[in-house]
Amino acid sequence: MIRALDATFGAVGRGYLALARTVGGIVVLFGRILRAMVPPRFDRDETWRNLYDVGVKSFPIVVVTALFVGAIMVIQSAFYVKRTGATGLLGYGVGFSVFAEIGPILIGLMFSGRVGANTTAQLGTMVVTEQVDALRTLAIDPIRYLVVPRFVTMLLMMTLLMVLGDAFAVLGAAGTADAMLGVDWRVLVQGLLEAHFLDEFFMGVVKASCFGVSISVISCFYGLNVRGGAVGVGRAVNASVVANAAAIFVLDFVIGTLYTVM
Image (cartoon, rainbow, N blue to C red; front, top):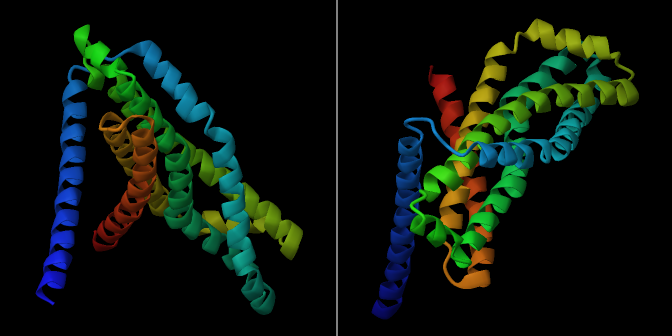
């Protein structure tokens, strides 16, 4: 009995220490990124390359995700709209769920799955093949050269993609409402405008910006701390995806709570 309790508490303690080391390392890396941005001088070619990889290549999957998010919101409301005939509330339901909650979370998860995992794999491969050590040998700061451009591009592109995702989600909702419910798209748009969702829209933008920060820092942390060769890269990518998903839900809860309190 005592041995079983010792093993249980030992496992809990080791898990807690591992979590504390991970969170502490992420916070330290975030501080180093902010320090490297003062003054704001980083590699322009690397930044443009990441803007294309992070933003342009993510655009199709974000558009598809947003269209289906809007369509799903209409489908979920279809039963009540048909039963009550409250077509004017369709825009309100779609707008609140898409702008404030479902849109940012789903787009953030897709972004982390594609961009975050790719960033971890890239940096992890560079660590395993000693390219990061070569940069240090040449007196080039890996944080300023590799991490800062990815941090800036993920922050900008996650925010911009969220705004574009809102537009395409409304487009998908309007098309689905017209096709499945026979509700003219102007009715849905008018419902959106009358509901005054400016606060919810800005809350979604804030969430997207915070998601971009967390995805960039967590992905770079796991990428730069790869150990164990190619197998270690795979483990780091898996851990990065899980940590990014957890961070998205935690940040969504915190921001939503602060928004409610304020």
